[in-house]
Image 1 (spheres, rainbow, N blue to C red):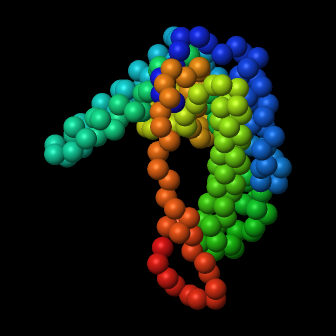
Image 2 (cartoon, one colour; image 1 turned 135 degrees about the vertical axis):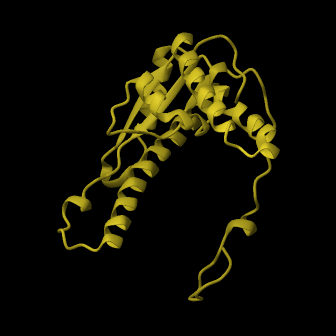
Length: 204
């Protein structure tokens, strides 16, 4: 949903959404998430202004032939400003194995470990976001999941007070929907499934 009525969900409803989000599974059950919530127009406006400034800065470096296309794309990055509330899930990577290996561990192994630890945090909070969005729908609320605003991630972390050790995963605008968009087509199962029967290689 990208269009919302002016009525603002109550803070109790937002807390219910986050309560269900925290029931999601997480790597090693570490629940590496926090949920920052902006439900006042001033804060949401400041965030939108920061994102728009980042979009404008990037546009100055886009090849002239693609500037209009990027501008149209960048317009979506600030659509959260139409929502009466914005939930900003954040996560920390699951740093365990990195602290256990010794200094002789090859660099390639270290990089794979770090990627695994980062993905463990990101996937965990992603599961929580899906819980939140599905429960919001059941309550008659509309949401969307946005990563475009992260072009201004440093400014957004400062506005929201997100500690340096935490990463913003996405923006989740939430409110009572003022539109009924038709579901977009989905790829067929045949288009996305790849059976692996002991055959090496194959098409992606």
